Image (cartoon, rainbow over all chains, first blue to last red; front, side, top):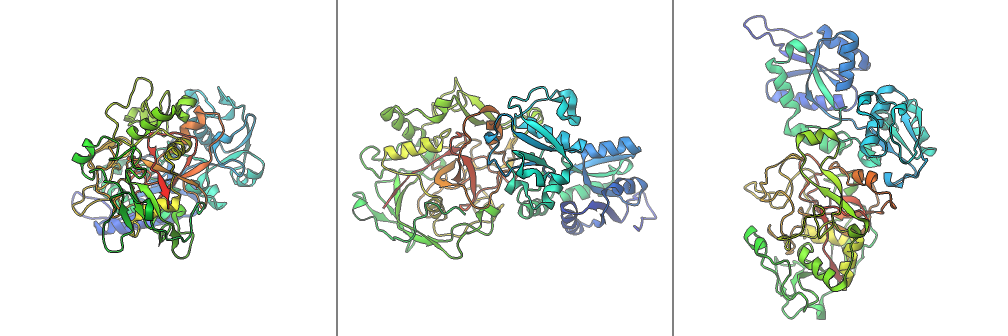
Amino acid sequence: MAAFASAGADTSPQVIRIGVSAGPQAEIMEEVKGVAAGKGLDLQVVHFDDENKIDAALDAGTLDANSFQDLPYLDQQKQAHGYHLVDVAYTVTLPLAFYSKKLTSLRGLKPGDTVALPKTLADCARALILLQNYGLITFPDTAGLHATPRDLSTNPRKLKFITLAPAQLPGALDKVAFAAIPWAVAEQAGLQPARDAIGMEDARSPYANVIAVRAQDKNRPWVAQLVAAYHSEPIKHYILAHYQDSVRRPW
Amino acid sequence: MAKKGLILAALAVAGGALGAVALRVGAFNAPVTIGPPPAALGSPEQCSRYSGLPPQWGSDRHAGMVHLAGGRFVFGTTLGYQDERPAESGKVAVAAFWIDQTEVTNRQFAAFVAATAYVTTAERDGGAVVFHKPDYAELKTRPYAWWSYVQGADWNHPTGPGSDRKGLDNQPVTLVTQADALAYAHWLGRDLPTEAEWEYAAKAGRQDAKLDEAPRDAAGKPTANYWQGSFPVLNTGADGHEGLAPVGCYAANDWKLYDMIGNAWEWTADPYSGPHQGHANGDTASVAAASRTGRPGQPMVIKGGSFLCSQDFCVRYRASAREAQEDNLPASHIGFRTVLRG
């Protein structure tokens, strides 16, 4: 439980509690904690096994900030639950990527090849956006971040699409030309996008992850201190050296 | 680490291959020997005055080259990306060879084309991948907005139809494929360096730098042509150049070779094998996938980084750094230099 200053105008908590999911989000934040401590900001990194509870905990005030989600997910959570949360900084992008056991390059695609996509709606849209970015398909702008295979307006290579539960995608690599696999699923399968993929998202993806705080706190001094600690040279170096571009920095 | 083409042992000496003026230079035991008189390069003033043709071009087969005695070195590094890990437990050996002091210039390539009527891949295929600095609005429209497949771009029309290489004689030729580079090299009776030869020459007897350690002098000034600032929208030009620079604007390495790091990536003779590492700078294949339907190229090793490598993207300033490039995909940040073995 954080202690709060009891006097004066500054009601900033003395310890900032920040909720994180397992993996890179937690690993990087532990590094940020060290940098922040050197600048006089005391961070308590709160690890969650269940990502679904992190925004609720922040909105309820048991956390001061969180770092686990991308912007479209935050928007969806705010809409669904009425949370008064805002994003204050980009953290890292965990790239969705194309993996193949049959192709060494997307230029090796043949007409009529089969491509496996994640069945979950958000991941499927994300995969379709990446396909469009590589010029392999197009869909109308109106589909936005919610595109489905039914929205395709052009598919010049006549690619066939199958959708699978994300966890089944690595197992489908023996059968399809390539599969679009979310970062966490790929990581479970021992795949690293920068090393193993034939196409991957740019760091500046719409799905870059963010630090979120309660709207009422966004101008508090500790928020700026937290962002400065995250966007510091030691953290830049850690992300590059530790993840070697398989976790990417959009700032 | 790819080892194909690696020549083991054979500590040859240049012997009769040396030009009339042979001079040992550098520190004791430095294996470099200068053949024909070298071009005066190594500073902004000198490179800006350079014609693009080395002294005795056309009359001495080693014009523009230095001779490196063979030797042993650590091929790769543990300090860089995963694909740079040394494949051998100890040092590997490289035989003696001559190597261009600079990247091959537009003027040298023009001489080759004039003599042979050679038509490059980009001229045959009708286009190439070209870099431009996007604005923020453009950056939001598509990923890798800094790369475009430009119809009509080739070595002689660097940004597409209507452009020319006027004033660029002393810059490295780019927008050439590996086959184009080999054609030039063979015209001179030379070859492209293997990855090991290239890296041996670039390291010049030194250990490699760390992953994100950009080349700077003691005062912090960049000592090669790479990107300072926020890629791809802000280039402070602290190194004196925002795009390609003329060859030889920066001091040579200890073995008298210019621009081994930065300016243009350089083709090698070797296929890209071993652990792979994607290029966070936006693989040029990302725009080629949509624009070209021909055979996918064979991934080959390019070395040295380019004017686009920055702290934000690419991050390849080391002699050990490597990147895969499809052999038949020309791009505006890739050139080459040649070797002559023996």
